[in-house]
Image (cartoon, rainbow, N blue to C red; front, side, top):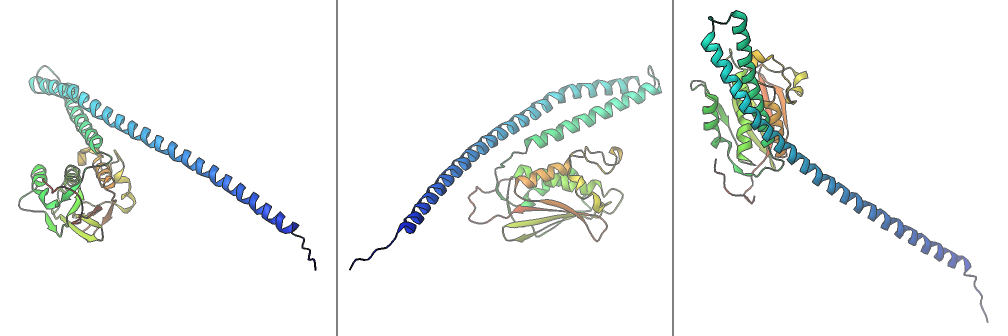
Length: 282
């Protein structure tokens, strides 16, 4: 007995599968090559971006340092003229003009110093175990905090952070609380709550407060809600705060509180015992 079977269709199907596999392998290989090329291009762009950021940071630092000296000399000589000739050789308009020069030179120097602070905030700060309470005595002394109206501290868990940048963050936030509480009762609280690997801090005051629609705008550089004569700042303090917090992988935001003032919230990575870092030395 002889049996015959037509396997043409099966052979054609096998050939079609083989061709499909070859096509798929070619597409996968081509796609892999494209992804690798994209990865190399992205890596190159990141390196270029980091180099440009470093160059801009160095430029800002050098330019700011170089600007401070002529501003200092301008302010010094204008002040000398104002003191030596006020009400004598110069008339009232000249005295007023000299006063403007002195005031604007001082403002420009503060602005240069603020730019230096922004330039000094590195992209990847060196972090250590940090207890915020260790930073507060120097900060409060620098701010000349009233001894009869002390800052209240409640539950401040340790964090993994850069001491210099955290000192700048707290100086700016507590300085704002002090400044915008002028003429009101100074009632400021610094508190923290740990949730998992993050600590949420709050600086709460009973000052003038911030309207909800402006809660995001105040973090923009040079954005001011009060005029300069009222607050005396350059509108860069909260921008520095946001940059510091974001460099630590956290976020910062503002809400109102039940005292009619402002509460600034920010998150930082919590310190864990297995973190590989040297002990903090404030």
